[in-house]
Each structure stands twice: as structure tokens, then as C-alpha cells.
Length: 369
Image (cartoon, rainbow, N blue to C red):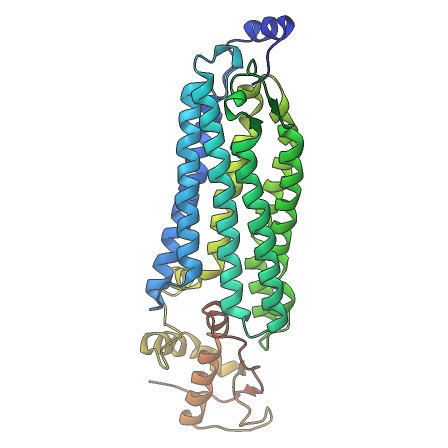
């Protein structure tokens, strides 16, 4: 911590009533709650779909543990004076150690939620060798700058004790400059992680509306990019003498970035939760037939069959066919219902699904008991 000039000390004493500690605690509570809910829902979705936990699920859970540790350490820093002016600090050594711990845990958690997303992409699109190579390249870049962030957090001053006692002989790196440079790498990795799978999703053999929905789900992760960009723009404040006050916003946005990243990494796996809310149940992609799903869809669409509704999924009949019997109509409806699992199959690593070919127009009244 830099030594304060008499003018700076006078300014802080005049504004000694200022306190942003409640802002830090409130943001920590909101962000951590969202992250915990997202991970719990992710595990519920896996259980609902009768799928075993994969490496990406375990990685995002570990990322949540490190993010929780980051917030716990940050909360202890608030107890020691974070959010207030530095003139009020009574134990600068303990505060500096808390900040170092927060920075290390932040870097590890940020790397892990990105690794979780990359592992998910590998499950979905691992059949593409070129895409797999780029996944490994991006993972290596994330690992390198994350290790650099951890090392910088510990070794920014030599000796380490000079971090909280500037009167000791030695030197310190420019914390704001180094953190900004590493933050730029982090922003670039966030953008690459969000946008890398989009071309592959667009090229999947499925209906365009499913592609748009999938892309929309993945683009929700772009809020992580906004958090990391804003955080980079304020990292230069770390070099200010009044570090406990200046570090308030970087601490808030570091927690927000990691927690929102965990939420974003979990969103693509939550289709079973959506099905439970909208349909009241979820039929696993491992099931060939779901009686509840078939019954509800056939019952719900019975009245539509009287108005020439189009159904995808079968090319066995032409649009100009005059009459059909109940058995052939039921077969067409079942084929259309099975096509609704296309998105689920992609999200549960079943790979690209066949294109839905053929359109059947039913023009007669059909009653299905």
C-alpha cells in the first residue's frame, strides 16, 4: 500500500463517513445466490434427463467452490476495511493477504467456468477435429494467463511483505497496468468462448427456429463479456493510494463476472427444467417413447387436425392427398413429436441430428381416442 500524502490524509479524514461496504456485501449475496441456483438447476436437469454427470458439470461445480471462497475472502476484507478509506485500516497486513487471496481465487474460478464451457463444446461438437484443435488452443491460452494472474497476485512486490509495508526495501510492479494487460487477455478469451460454437450450431441439420433458439441460449453468455470489459476499464484504480476505497468496484465486478460466468455456462444444459415448467414433465432423450408426452401432444393437437395443420417428420404422403385413416395420421403425429427432441439431443451431446424432411398436410377430421 502506497504512503499517503498529507493532502490525501486530510481528504480522507474529511470524507471518513463514506462507506461502500454494504454495496460489496449486497452484490456478493446476489451474485453468489444466482450462481448456486444455476448449478443446482444444472444438476437437477441432469437427473431429470437421467444422464450421468460429465466433466463439464463437475468443472463448473469446482468453479462455484472457488467463487464461494473468493466471496468469503472478500467479505472478510470488508470486515478489515474494504469499502472505506485506507486511513481507517488498523491491520494492513491482514487486509493485503485477503486481497491476494481474492485475486488468486478469482483467477482460478474464472478459468474453471471457461473450461466447463469448453468441455461442453467438446461433448457437443467433438467430432470436428478442427474445432477440437481450436478448443485446445483456447484452453492453453486461458491456462497461461490464469497462471500469470495467480503468480502476479502473490509476487507483485518483492519481498512479498512490501505489499502491505511500503517502508521495506524492494520494489513493486504497477498493479493497475499488469492487471489491465491480463484483463485484456481475459476479455478476449470470454469473447472466444461465447462465439466459438455459433458457426457450428448454425450448420447443424435441424430446423432454423431450433438453431436460432440455440444461438440465443449461447448468446446469453455475452453478459460475461460486458462484465469483464467494464472490470478492465476500472483496474487502473488498483494503483491508487486509497486502495481500500478504490478497489470497491473491481471487487464487485470480479464477483459478478465469475458468478454470471457460472450461470452462463449452465444455461445450455437447462432444457429439461424448461420442459418441466412448460410441459409439466420431461421425457429423456434416452427414451424411445414417452406415453405422457405423446398423450398430451395428441390430445392438445386433436382439434388442429381439422384445419389442415402442417406437421413435419414424414414424407410418406403428399400435400394433395384427399383422405387418410386414423392409423396413418397417428403415425405422422408421433413422427412429428419425436422431432421435438432435436434441441435436447444436441444439448445432451447426441451430436448433429438428421434434417427434418417432408411436410404432411392433414385435411380430414381425425379423432384419436
